[in-house]
Image (cartoon, rainbow, N blue to C red):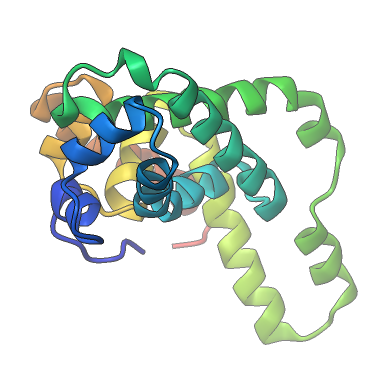
Length: 196
């Protein structure tokens, strides 16, 4: 599930010549190229995070834009560059939660397109694959917010516990504990439905 990567700092500083601290400083001074560089360094992991909460590409793209509007609107509030990525992720998570709360009724009343397609298609292999994916997605949706955050950041996004702890303001032990609980809940959910 997770794509391999070293850590946040290597991911963030891997592209371009400017250091991340320099980009933040230049962005605070209004440098549009520096803002664009920050956007390009963070857009993929933030899009993936938004998509895992919405399971909707268009909504995830809208959320990505909203996240960056908030980040760049409050860029002057950033004092420490080493906590910047965690601050951005906190904005991203809060933006996703706000979206889910605002659209709760919509999600409860609509049938997903993939659900309708699998009902129409009789191809057994496609149907089984979609069913497995939907079951896993449903299982992830049942996790409490704090457990889901840690699970998505660790097992889907590939972050390490020390990075997650910095992002979410937790201890490393709490991050590990919440990941363990999330995995157990997912296992129980899938086991109860004879999916594993």
